[in-house]
Image (cartoon, rainbow, N blue to C red; front, side, top):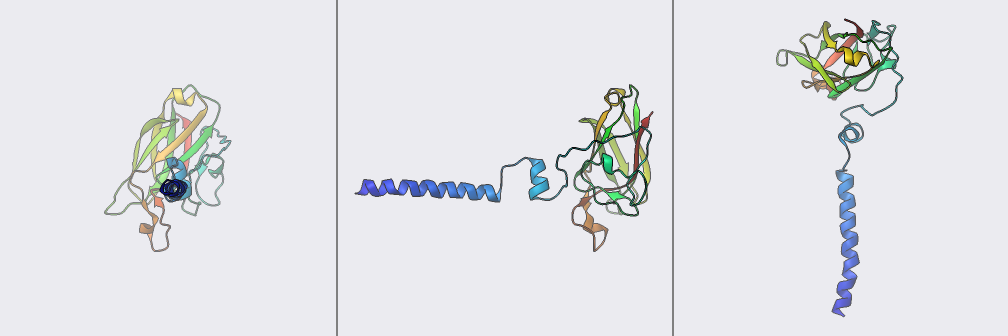
Length: 198
């Protein structure tokens, strides 16, 4: 009789263990960092998607609401909506995609942008990479737009395909901009961007 009772407890323990395991996955699912940031923590809008990203070298892309040549066809992820002064980065990084006839020449990326800075945080760093290769770190120190450039080696330019990534190690909550701002991370307010032959 005791052995039979012990045998009946075994399925109960197994079911209870499975339920606890399932509950732990709901509370803390085992997913990759991109999925977690987009769906769970909502700290980024970066979810992989396809964009054709056509681009003509030397063409200025605008990040200002209502301006011609808006950046949307080359937009990857990590961007707020444009306003009259430009478009803020959203989250810890942003991406842009460019497809163009390959050029076996060095290229130059030019960014015109202002930064989320104040006396306590006088600089915003932007770590720029292309196709997984780090190109350099830019520094922006004013809310007003400043122009910065970074070189792109010929071996990347000749591929005709650049996936640019901008990492923002100094990004801070948008609430620091004013009482009605978003709580998500902000760093740089892009005004325009272009890639051209050096």
